[in-house]
Image 1 (spheres, one colour):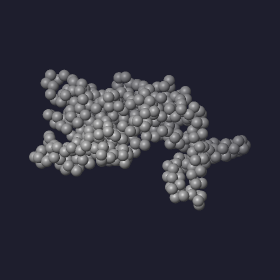
Image 2: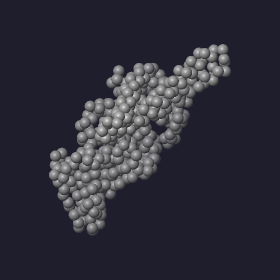
Image 3: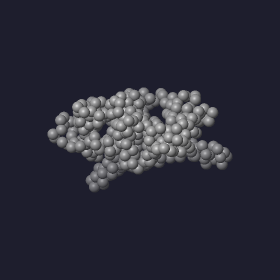
Image 4: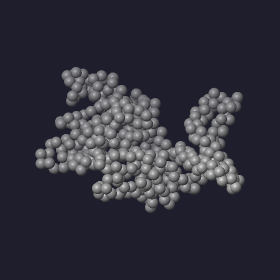
Length: 432
C-alpha cells in the first residue's frame, strides 16, 4: 500500500473495509518541496480502535527528492556555513587570539559542529557520485563493472538525499524554548461541574503521558470543585524536549459526554483550557525583588487541620506586569513560594518570547494554529468513542487509550510534522 501526494492533498485508506468512509484526505503543504507529485511507502502502523491507519515518521516524508530550487537555496546556505566554520577555526588557531575571543569562537563553532559534520559527509558522498558516474561512462564494454558501479550509484544517491534532508532540517528556524521543561495549566471553562471533572481528566491524561515518556511530573497547585473535579490545576513537567513536544497542546479542549449529574442521559458539551508554558528562571526574565509583592495566607480546601491553621499559602504579584500567581499545594510556605516563582517566571518568559518573536507568529497561526488558549483545538466525543484534532483533521476512535495518555502521540507527532513542513515552505519562499 502506498500514499500519494497530489493537488495539495495527502490521501490514505483505512485497512478496515467496513469503515465508512474507507478513505480520507488531509491537507499537506508539501508541493513546493516535492514538486508535482510524490509516492511514499508506509513505515509505521498505528492502531486507532478497530481501524488501522498508516502514519509516517518525519524522515520518511523527507526522503523523496527535494525540488531543484530548494536544493540550490540550501546549497548557498551550506557554503556560507562552511565559510563561517573556517573563519571560526582560524580565529581559534591564531596565537594572538584573546581568551574571550577564543571562547566566543569555540562556543559558536560547537553549535555548528553537527551541521559541519553532515556537510562533510554530503561532500564526500557527492564526490563518490561523480566518481561512480565516471566509472560507468568508462565501462561501456565491461558489463559487470558497469552494473556494480550502477548499484553503488543508487545507494550513494539515496545517501545524498538523506543527508540533504537532514541538513535542511538543521537550517530551519528553531524555537530555543523547545528544549526547555514546561509548566502545564488546566482550567475548567464552560460547563460548570462537568467542566471541572473533565479538567481533572485532562490533567491526569497529561500526567500519565508524562509518566509513559519517563518525564518528571510535579503537581504545583490544584483547586478542587464541589464534586472534587479541578477548577484549576498546574504542574511542572521536566524531561528531554518537553516544551517542544507539548507546546501545541495549548488551547480549548472540548468534551461531549453525559455528565455524572445528568439523570436524563442527555449529552452535554463542556470545555477546558490548556496552557503550556516553557519553564524559565530568574536569570531569563531578570526578576527583581523590588518588583515582587509577596503575601501569605491560610490555605483552604483539602490539606487537613495543619493547612488551615498556618499561613502556608503564597501569593506573588509581579508589580510591573500585574501578573499574580497563588500556590497553596504544599504545607511549607517556602516550597509554595518556590513553586509560585517557577510559574511566574514561566509566564513572564512566555510574554517576552511572544514580544521578541512576534514577526514569526504568522506561520504558526495560519498553518497549524496559534497555540492560543482561546482556540478550540480538540474535541473528545465519549458517546462516539472518538477524539478529533481540528488543526490536522485526525480522528482517533480509541478515546479510552487517549485519556490514559497512551495514544496522544497520534496528534502530537502529526502537529510537529505539520510544523516542520510549514517551516520548509516558509524557508523556501523567504530565500527565493
